[in-house]
Each structure stands twice: as structure tokens, then as C-alpha cells.
Image (tube, rainbow, N blue to C red):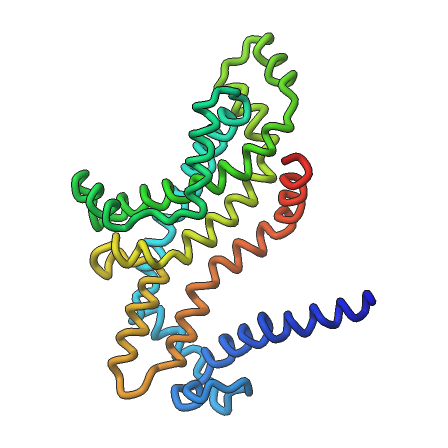
Length: 273
């Protein structure tokens, strides 16, 4: 039975992960004529350098990469820090108002923000179309997932640790920074990975909230690049595949860096939550 499960999972992984990834990589190294066939075979003529060089120089990739990092890095930092603070407050409070606020915060996970009121608010604040406005929307709409993950974990942390620290003269901020936050790091790391993936790949809000190609994030730049390719007599699939690879590369690197801590963090959150 175990061998059957392993075989079934291997077949699923081959069909849904390995083959699409192989198709993406191999076609990004082909010239236009071969890549347009969308085949799985090795290139008869390699165009790896030419394809990636074109995307890096004429595909708007460097500026889009910078724009994505300018949005994603502050979003992760602000959301994780303030989300952990809110989770600590929710976990320790017994007031009905705190429970209501927690449920409203967590509800943001399944209820998408209304785009038109969001645009109107940004216009009133004078930051419509800017990276700052986009960052604020990303941080606000992603806060619920961190709060949801961290609240259950913090509830399992013994109150005696905080009481002992308070008796020793620690302030509330010191208790949070020296006790609560370090203990919640495994769960917050999982939340950070989820935030990185969702924020890095976000396209819907970017399309409406960012104005000008010089402010485009990587998914939006890829959309503009593919749309420009559509204006050509033939879709430049080789360049589109190369752009997709470069867009996904930072996420792959982040996953390789943190993947050893993802499973322990999930297990910790599941057991203690």
C-alpha cells in the first residue's frame, strides 16, 4: 500500500510539477520557431543567452524587480511585526470587543478588499497610483493571515513567562520583543512565506493601483511584456518563457533558503494552535 501511494504521488508530481517546470525551462532556451511549438524536447539550436539577455535589457525586468522588492520587503516586515502584536493582544484579551475585532481581521482572508472604495480612499489621501499606496493596501489585506496563524500559537504560550518578566521589571514592549516574538518565529516564518508568495505574485491590485510602467511589479511587467508580444505577428513564446523564469526565480531562491523551517513551523502552529 505504501509503495502504491508513493507511486501515485510521484505520478501526480510528474504531471503537475515536473513537466510544466521542464517545459518552462527548456522553451526559454529555444529560438522563437522552436519555442512556438511548445514541445518538451531539447532545443536543436540553443538561444538561452539571447532570450534572457533580451528580457533583462528590453523587457523591463530590472526596474520591475526593484519595484517588487520595494513593495514586498516592507510589506513582510510591517505585516509580520504588527500582525504578531495584534495576535498577542487578541490571544491575551478576554473582552468581547477583542473577539469581534479578531474575527473581522481574520475575515479579510476570505473577503477580498473592494477595489473601487480602495481607489477612492487612496485618491483622497493623494497616493493613488503610487508604490506607497500599493504597499499600504498589500499590508492591510495580508494582515489577517498573520494574525490567524500567530494567535493560536501565542495562546499556548504560558502566561507565567510574561508575569515573571513583568515582575523583573520588563515593559510590555520588552516582553513582546524578548519572549513572545522569539517564541512565535517558526509560525511567523510560515506566515512570511505565505505573504511573500501572495504579494510577489499579486496582479489584480497592481493592475489598478500602480500607474505607469516604471512602477510595475514583476507580474504586471510580465503582463505588459506578453501584451506587447501579442502585437507581434507571432507570440514570442521564447521571451515570455524566459520572463516567467526570471519572475519566478526570486521565489525559488527564497523557498530553498527557508524550506527546512517551513514544516517545523507548520507543525508547531498545528500542535500549539
